[in-house]
Length: 198
Figure 1 (cartoon, rainbow, N blue to C red):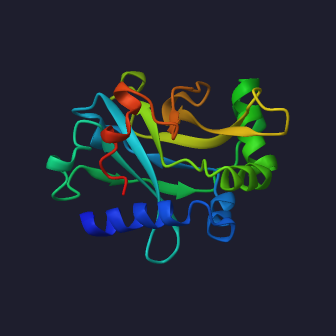
Figure 2 (tube, one colour):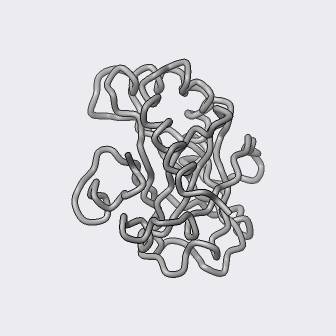
């Protein structure tokens, strides 16, 4: 079982180092993570995925139902799931959606320039909102590929980080439902909803 203090320390270490290019460069060696849906979807309005750096300086991802991501319910890590972090190479013949492929490839090609810009602008992602309504509780597992979306509001080459979700049993279907935070908003993306953040 996960230890709540170790999970909090790893998330804090990510946030303490998110603007350190050397520490964050480790993120470039992975393309995503996978997690078991059934373990965390019930009861869930949404899922929160937290990037973290563990005591071995390895990148980790912890997921928790938004129902349990409240300070009053975080006495233990009972409802937190550690995702499997992998380098999952996308296969051209298995990915029919050009948009999803372009985002995944943009992560591989433009990771370094994205990292430089987000560190300079102090906008490195702190968490992701994964809407529970878009997940099928009958799925055994989901793969989350990292992707980059061009930020068309800026003149320079700039990107938003994204996750492209792929149910293992539906390898031809991609779900574009994830919202990185910051920026924090209201309702589901309000800062107060992410209690595991330091």
